[in-house]
Image (cartoon, rainbow, N blue to C red):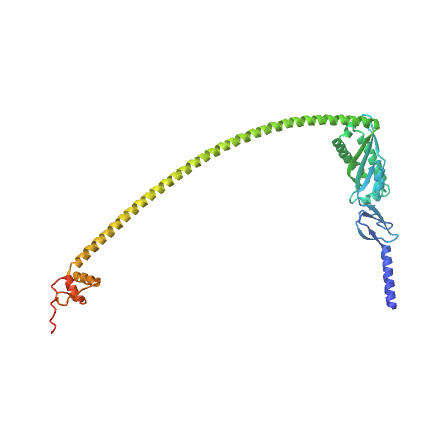
Length: 367
């Protein structure tokens, strides 16, 4: 138990000692170290970034400068001033009162952004400007703006391009002027220009006349362009019509050519059909005639051969047999007393009767 208490006490002492001999530099700050006494005393020639640094009490002294962009506003907009929180990097001042080269009093709202130059924060502290550099910068910027913006005329202030050009030239002068304070300006914006009420009224009337003149010029230019457009439309319409007619003629010509080609093809096909059909019919008739002739020749040859065959003894026998077989005698009267009457049931005898020869004499009854 005593060991735990001793360990906890030791850790507490180490933590207290650490907070006493170490210092923290925030992310939005530049750390500047000063050695109070000893051989290396003075401001160290270095800017320290975010982190934990050694800070021995009585021996080291640390200063913090803002690393962010600083804003210097010359404006009369109290609402804007109230809505912005002061972080030590914003400086709000009344608007600039400028007398132009044409003797007009003008109120100008402007804003300047600047930063402490990288690597020169320690020089700013060495020059004793750690708490006064904002005042010195404001005074120098005010002098430069009054001197440079007063070179503009009332007409120049009304033209945005002239204001932007003058702001760019003034920014270059400020870079040189503010270098001795170890800061660098980033941008200069002329936000608003206010004339006296009487001049504002005249200016508005002049602006109105100028806008009306520009409107007339624009209307004239529009009428000219409309006329050009109408002329171009008519030209395009005429060209389209000519092209349509040209294409219609081309289409008609091609259509006629195709119709002629189709008619030629149809006539050729019809002629080929008729010719082929006629040739086929002629070949068919010739084939039929040749077939008929061959059949007739075959029939004649058949008859000739059959007649020749039948004219022989065997043929006559065949004819006789056929005649006997096909003989149809519905009624026969036999005379038993006449031996010359043939016996119909005897085919051989009937055959000899049909073929030729005398009929046989019947034998006596007693034989």
